[in-house]
Image (tube, rainbow, N blue to C red; front, side, top):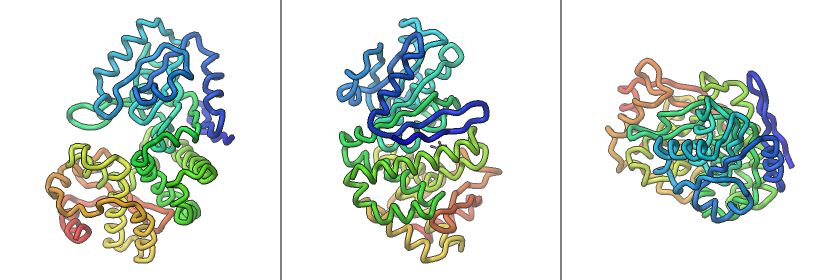
Length: 348
Ligand code: GLY
């Protein structure tokens, strides 16, 4: 069992990784007057019986990540008479975690919640760091709060029930950690990617520990996403645009991030920030995945339009987090005109 501490400005919490992590979540729940479980139909079918609490079971998928769902959950929380000393348990992937965290953050002006992530993406990224939210018709996560969980409890064994596409979805974020923050981890991933895809238990455990500790460090440095935390967005400026122009049906988030990382590495190379051998190293790792890497066919103007709305942008310039070598990134701002010029070069 590995315990990683997330240091916040006013408190700390732990990420518990290993067999038996869920027992610790249940022990933590004992400290509250009432517990309310939020999950989705897929996860409830697999693991719901391990939790004998009142529960709200969401329809799986991004479509359920709405204010309407949050209001329905909050009504149920009122109906079950949850108090300020009650706990929300978020059992599921990123959507469940974000919605449950959001409900926890606004119920009676904020009650405690813990994350029990069941997808690789949620285990290495979304369950850590307190970003909560729902989507609106205008975009993803436009309504939300920062509300840090009381703890994150990760049982790696649950990944064995994930479809392969979901594993690849999480691996986009895993590889991102190697490129943004740790050259040794990038090297490790290069050598163990196939074992990771096969979910070899020791490799999965090591990778979870490494990713969670990188994320914990970044969150500790920049809890409210004002600076350093931006580096988590490597691959996301282009990745988000690909997701949006294909109406979130063309790619999973992780696939879009994998493709986004390739083209952002290409951009870094074209701009002279990333040497050719560094680019080749990144490209080789990314191209282990069997994806449709070509994005030439996608509507350019629609892609630019989405990139111009990116939350990280500054003074009308588009923000890119670009690698300068595997393990290190820097922010680069490009005007829309500069972006248009470079785009032709990187997609061809
Ligand atoms: N998933 C990005 C962040 O936590 O900041």
